[in-house]
Length: 167
Image (cartoon, rainbow, N blue to C red):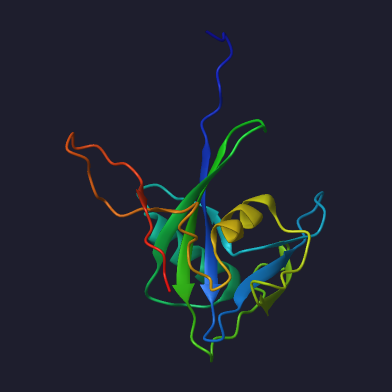
C-alpha cells in the first residue's frame, strides 16, 4: 500500500452542443500558460449538481446559449496527471437561431460550429475523448459507449449497459 495520499478526482462535464445541421460547438481555448486548444463548453461540477445541470449551466456561462434539456451519454476517465479527471459527456440540441458569444474572453477567443468529420486541432484532451465516443452521425458508438440510465442488476448495483446501435 502506498504511503502518499492520492488527490480526489476532478469531476467535470463536456457539452456536445449540436445545431440542426449536426455541427458541434467548439471554443478556441486561450488560457494563460497553455497552448491554444479547441474544446467543448464545459467545466467542473458544483456541489449537489447533476451532470445534466452542470452541462446546461456551463453552456450558458461560457457561450450565453440557454437550452432546457440535456442528456448525459458517457463518462471518460483520464489518468496519469496529478489527479484523475472524470468527464461526463452531456448532449444538447441547440436551435438554429442560437448565437454563441464569447462571455469569458480570458478563456476563449471564439466559438465556432464544426462537422464531426472536420474538427479543428489540437483538441483539449477531454474533448477529444468525448468526441471519440460519438460516431459519424453524432450518436454514441455502440462498440465503445454505455448507457448512463439508472438500470440495476439483480444485486441492486448500477452497471453499464451497451447502447443499442442507431440506424
